[in-house]
Length: 62
Image (tube, rainbow, N blue to C red; front, side, top):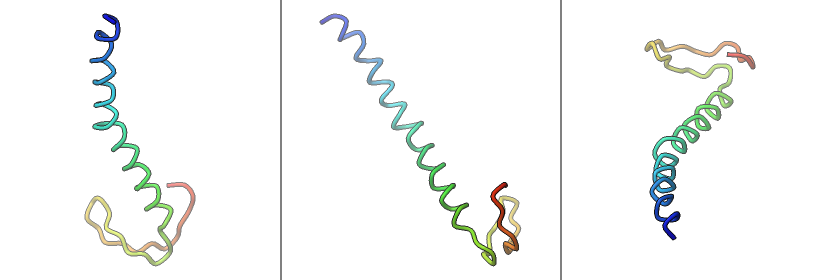
């Protein structure tokens, strides 16, 4: 019983780290991948530098 009480806080911390750090990061990566795959020729986007551009060609590598 004493071992369980010692391990329980570590399990709790790992669960918190998963829900605060790992899970949101995976969700954001999935959302970004879906957005990149949905781009088509003629779409207008704003780059991180603030430029408004129109997509002329879509390739698999980026």
